[in-house]
Amino acid sequence: MIGSSAKSEPDMNPIFAKAETSVFETMSRLARERQAINLGQGFPDDKGPDDVRAKAAEAVVDGWNQYPPMMGLPELRAAIAAHYRRFQALEFDPGSEIMVTSGATEALAGAILALIEPGDEVVLFQPMYDAYLPLVQRAGGVPKFVTLRPPDWTIHERDLAAAFSDRTRLVLFNNPLNPAGAVYGRDALALLAAYCVKYDAIALCDEVWEHVIFDGRSHAPLIAAPGMRERAVKIGSAGKIFSLTGWKVGFVCAAPRIMSALAKAHQFITFTTPPNLQTAVAYGLAKDDSYFAGMRAGLQRSRDRFSQGLVARGFSTLPSAGTYFLNIDISPLGWSDDFAFCSWLVKERGVAAIPVSAFYAKDAIRSVVRFCFAKEDLTLDGALSRLDHVARPR
Ligand SMILES: Cc1ncc(COP(=O)(O)O)c(C=O)c1O
Image 1 (cartoon, rainbow, N blue to C red):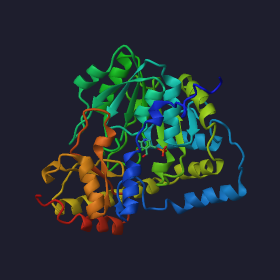
Image 2 (image 1 turned 90 degrees about the vertical axis):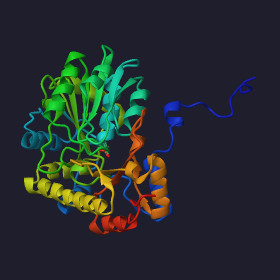
Image 3 (image 1 turned 135 degrees about the horizontal axis):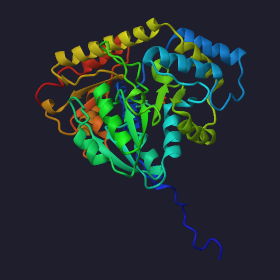
Image 4 (image 1 turned 180 degrees about the vertical axis):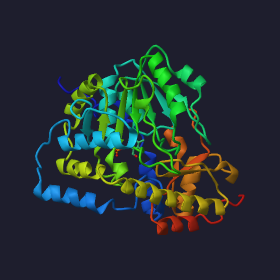
């Protein structure tokens, strides 16, 4: 009889159905419940530049609000090309090498779907952004991990040699690296590029933090490393460039052959991105150098204020060369489990942070805890005073 063997609940894909609630969500929920200061999730207190937001508002009211072109507004694609020429000496053809996506996350998802087949190996550097592994697994990729370790998160050649093989199709590389706050320079990039070339792999370069980098550093894009122009996909995000993380306007740059595959995936995922936000981002990317320098200087000041406050309270901080994040080493405090420390901190001290082991799939480092310092002085100072006496020997 029809239905007699039906299950009471239908099966679903286990990668998402069985995924646990993310640590960001858990910590934010605890922060709300405990009225804690939330230095967990990575978003700034700042409202973002007034003129860029005004441009978006104007475009909503007076502009075009129907489907924009699938590849993105021509004015935004031209602005992205000009922006990367100005800041990174890169040349992209806006007509065939640039696509606008709904955030870097869509760019990542589309690229992973477009570039690998089930059974292909994908090299992932851990700690890694939480979306990478489920997306790779859902696309049938076989993850091969390179483990990076504090305090300097160096990429060792022996680890690349162990992770790459003739089955490697894709490498996911995030630089500057969230959550580590590490910034990789030309030597590390040249080493990684040599492995991509040797194994004929494509690099998916998540560079959403490219402008959030401190102490006079400049960002080195992997696509400029030897042999990478035809085998790298560069991903950026307006959310990070303009401190407007909710906007979800991303962009992808790649050689035309790769771009045509990425565009096919994009057309069936979001197809397009709100036109008014695209207009505002095009305007923003053309802003004076002083805007970008000022944004960096403001964040660097917050980093230093928070870091000095932590050191004065006896914490041991790790270097932060970029991103919104500063890490501490909790082992000198007598803690050996970063999850336990973060749960204790949010419940007992009212400060939410993120355990860095959440960014590892295996062999997790359990001694590092991440704080977001992209907050107003008042918020940072409030958190610091709640951290008084935590670093005393327990
Ligand atoms: C490394 C990394 N990649 C991607 C993203 C997501 O970017 P978007 O909000 O543009 O999707 C983030 C956001 O924090 C990130 O840190």
